[in-house]
Amino acid sequence: MVDSWNAERERNALRRRLRLFDQASRLARFGAWECELSTERLTWTEGVYDLFGLTPGWPLKRAAIVDLYQDESRREMEFMRAEAIRSGQNFEVESQIRTIRGEVRWMRLSAGVVSEQGRPIRLFGSKQDITAEREVRDRLRRLAERDTLTGLANRALFEDRYREVIRSGLDGGSVSALVLIDLDHFKAVNDGQGHGAGDECLRQVALRLQDVFADAMLVARIGGDEFAVLLRAPLGPARIAQMLRRASAALSRPMLWNGARLDISASIGATILGRPHRRKPSELFAEADAALYQAKGAGRNAVRIFGEPTLHLAVARASGLL
Image (cartoon, one colour):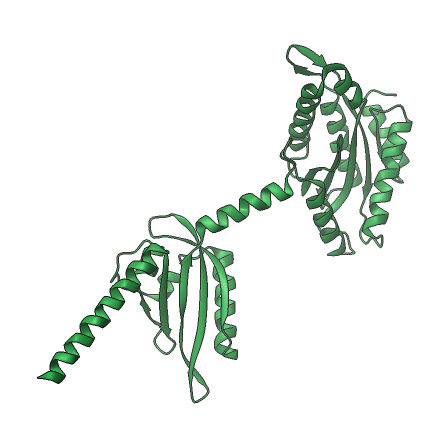
């Protein structure tokens, strides 16, 4: 009789602990899971059901659950799962999923391996909703990478991306040209109309650059009135010259601010990445900067492409300068 009473007391205590775990894990948007490798049978706690937008007790089929992962996350998760089964090593990964109701969420998936006689038989671990955490991280990253006035990439992001894409392929990779842009007589706008006018001018320049270079890899503000663009490959020299001509025309259009007309133009210099190229990132930047210096020396409101005198002539004629 005593043994029966003790057993019932233990069962009640276990039910209370399980209920407490489920309540706490659902509050933390967290759950535990396991998968039998021989049958792919899944077992979840209520927190994982909640994460995927499913009713607890819903019949679980691994193939259907995997389909709820976004493509890139699915590939990464399946690769790490296979490596864990092969090596017996634990892993952790952040994956993007779409719930059964179509909501996009991020989760942190942790997994361990249970083996018997050296053979993996089961995976287990936890899944936690980190959507809010990712949103905060993404906002902080955007603040760190974006120019607060124009919304363009800032200099730090430009330098990181520039070195990355140039060094990733000496054959030119995914970049066809580096373009540097410097506004002409911008100081006169700031001094004559005030910093409010100058700020509006920079915002309008950013919008025009994004319009002209809509397909660019990156458009950045790298200084006070200095901008840089990475053009995607493949683009031939003639097409690049045409885009720079359009940019020059767009930036020379007058702007309005508080009823006042702001006259602005830009000097543009570029260097083209041939296939193959053997220049370092610093050398390519120096070439574009030299072309920019030539554009300024030509009277400003001009376009120059490093080492391409015939294109200079074509740009000047098309712009009505000759």
